[in-house]
Amino acid sequence: MTFDRPVTRSLTERAPQPQVPPSRAHPGAVLGAIHLGAAMVLLLWWGNAETSPTLADWLTEVGRITGLLAGYAVVVLLALMARVPALERGIGSDRLTRWHAMGGRYTVTLVVVHGLFITWGYAVAANTGLVEQGRTLVLTYPNLMMATVAGLLFVMVGAVSARAARKRLRYETWHFLHCYTYLAVALAFSHQFSTGKEFVDNPTARVVWSAMYVVVALLLIWYRFLAPVRLAFRHQLRITDVCHESHDIVSIYMTGVELHRLYAEPGQFFRWRILSKGLWYSANPYSLSAPVHPDLIRITVRLSGDHSRALAAVKPGTWVFPEGPYGAFTSGRQTQPKVLLLGGGVGVTPLRTLFETLPVAPGDLTMLYRASREADIIFRDEFEVLAAQSGHHVHFLIGTRDELGYDPLSVPNLGRLVPKLIEHDVYVCGPDGMVAAALRSLREAGVPERRIHLESFAF
Ligand SMILES: Cc1cc2nc3c(=O)[nH]c(=O)nc-3n(C[C@H](O)[C@H](O)[C@H](O)COP(=O)(O)OP(=O)(O)OC[C@H]3O[C@@H](n4cnc5c(N)ncnc54)[C@H](O)[C@@H]3O)c2cc1C
Image (cartoon, rainbow, N blue to C red; front, side, top):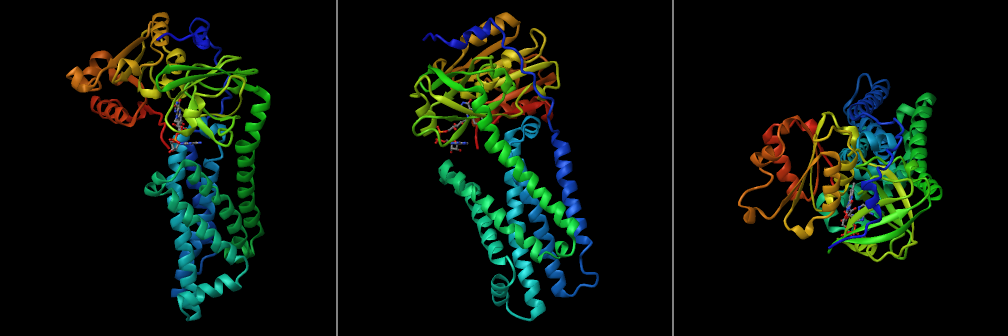
């Protein structure tokens, strides 16, 4: 099959590299700041804790400290998902999402423990039952009705995000339910000041706490809602071509204005909102499959579900709103002069872009492209032309293990194809099975964990 690809000219005419704003948060620094914030919260609690506590005080103090930490944790969780460029470039969306998911589990636990221990402590102090005390708190204390609804919403969001439930839900349904977190945060806010001992008589604490919420709200409004609209108007992206790369993979070409000012780095992705019937309401993530030119962008999509399949039928001229760029699967992760790119399936899309652009000496870049069948290979011509131009290496590892009679991702085979494997940075992207096999071999071969860079297309 031959393809008339508009982007083919990028093989001879190099795309200008983006002048990336030098904002890249360091993961260690961000984690440090999060822990420092938690320590400040503990100090705030410590300064107001009972000095000679009774049993009721002990229980209530557990409720207070968990409540304060939960109030802080939700702000951190929202900040991680605010799509702040420095976080996206420095940490990467997949790692931010993992931190968010892990933090979410802690937060829901804190919320539940907070509610239970406050009620228990008050019940012991008033010498009454747990249920009776719970009713009194909800019905008579200021803002506690709203806070209780918020707590239930947090638990609901936690439940639908648990792995077992998440797998059964459509992405759109899960996403819709997840948005109730915003409502929960808003409902829970006021009870902190009206009933929280740490805030009632401490205006400074109230101002700092409110500022934390306001800053994160502004980040969310700007980066999740206003910035994408600004990008859309500034760059005026429209689809020009949709070309089949294989029976279930299409490339989508878009043109627009001053696209280099999107500052998209090779290896990054955008969430694409396609303004056509049935597609406009969701923004799905797809990686760049070629470096961005001032007037041309390409993504390459496997036709898997409703959204991707509908993309194959999109008409030229359709407007596109890009949200991004996101992701840290870029040259920013490179630490060594030699690089191995290892991919398969539609996971080769960011690798194709990196193969053209990574700053390495001729011959120091190797691409290993794993596929079960020749018909599954995409961009073979582009990889071969780029390899010939740059002196880099590309190897297509085609065939099942049974057909080949050996495992193409085994340590001996990797060692044969990539001399001095352990001196390489390795970028991996592909189907789960391939990625797992590659990681096993790379670790067995002694490639340090910090030099293995993963991009996951899973959510
Ligand atoms: C960082 C990243 C880069 C990616 N790059 C590519 C690429 O270059 N080429 C490619 O083919 N695929 C890529 N994907 C995967 C691609 O985004 C999904 O396969 C696609 O969104 C599935 O949508 P669907 O409706 O066709 O499939 P469905 O079968 O309806 O959905 C499959 C799964 O995709 C996820 N999903 C669906 N809609 C969304 C959404 N709006 N936002 C987030 N997740 C959603 C859900 O987990 C869902 O279960 C990438 C994913 C990520 C996270």
